[in-house]
Length: 292
Image (cartoon, rainbow, N blue to C red; front, top):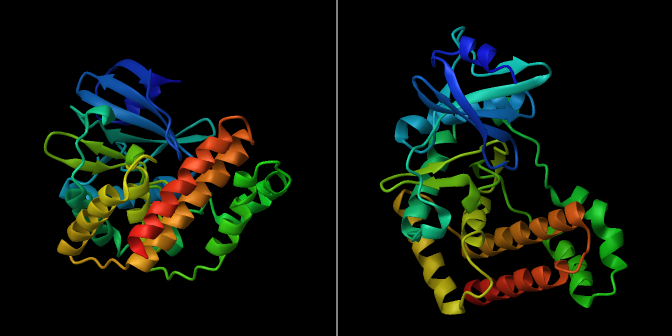
C-alpha cells in the first residue's frame, strides 16, 4: 500500500505506522498513526458506498453519534488506489473493550432513535445500499443443504424461512442494516455507531432487533430479556420513536434466521452448526414468550 501517496492526499502529516484492524462486514480497515494524530483507513466496495458513508457521517458526527470522514485536499470524501476505493475517518480514542461493557439498554434505545432521526432525510434512491443478506437469495443458496440435512433442528429452518417470508413490514426509516454490537463503539461518555456500509430504506425495528439480539446470549432468562426490551423501548420512545412489539418480534425473527442462513452459506453445515442453530432458535422462543 502506498502510504506516501495516501498522506499526500490528506492534511494529516506523515504516516508513521500502519496496522490492520478487525475486519468489518462491509469493509476492511487499517489504523494510520500520523504526525497529526490517528485515523482509520477503510477499504470500501464501491463509490456508492463511499458517498453513502460520507453523507451518513456528515449527519451523525455533529451529534457525536459517529466518527467523521476526512475529505482530501481536493474536497473528495474518498480516494482511489489502483481499482480500490478508500475513505479516511477519525479514530475514536479510549474505546471500552466489549468484554468490559456494562450495557445500558435505555441509552441504546435513545442512541438508535437519534441515529434514525439524524439520517431520515437522506436520499436512499441515490445512496441506499443493496441488502446483501436478503432472505430470498440466502435461502436459494442453502435450501438444498438444509432440506437434505439429517438434523431435524437444521430442517426446521425451512419452516422459519417460510414464516419470515410472510412478514409485510413497511419501510419506515433509513436504517443502519447491520446494527449489531460489533458496529457500536463505547467510550466512558459516548456511544458511536460505525460501519454504515449497509445503510438503506427499511423498518426501524430491524435495527432495534439487531442491537437487542446481538447483545443477548442464549442463556438469558425470559425475565432478563423482558427487562432489556422494556428498557430499549423506553429509550427509543423517549426520543420520539415508536415501538410495536409484534413488529419487533418479526424483525428479531428475520434478523436471527438471516444470520443462521448466512453462517450456513459461509461455512456449511458442520459439527458446530447444529448446537449454534439450536441456541438461536431457543433465543427466538424466549422472544416470542416475552412479546406474545
